Length: 210
Image: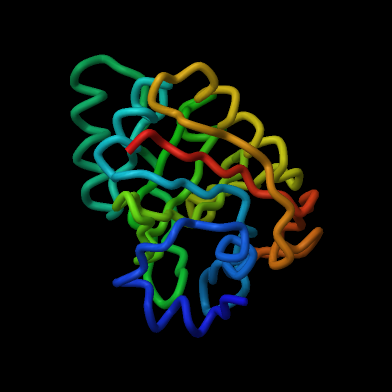
């Protein structure tokens, strides 16, 4: 049986096939602001970063910059081109294993207010084919909370997970997509901003061709 400690100690050299035991030991939540418990795990990617980006962009997702300044810069460019805002407001920084997210992805419904979005973190684990394992969490932002430019999320995190799956369905670069019950995923809770959420305890596992 693989333990989380063993994964942490050996993750840089990990080259064994990614068996279900590994997924089952992934932490079920990230860490939000002020060290509070954040959002639940509901997305797992397995693939090289360049291919993951290409697949998501072709499915209509926009990569959001990681910093406030970069989001402002890219948003000004969009406005000057007469385009709708897709890269503002920025996404809050959440932590996984002491690190903030490596990628932010959005599909805007209503500029500034409503959007599909998720965050991805490198776990440092790779399979025998060199594909990176990414830990992810996504939900649907329903309305803007103007006091701090954050959003009120839909409490049903299953909907955003399933929406992502629909956008990637049919991609020639997706080797397999499946839902898996993972023991670490909470069935309900409250995030760092005090908003409730619920899940069915399953994560979407997306395995890319490379």
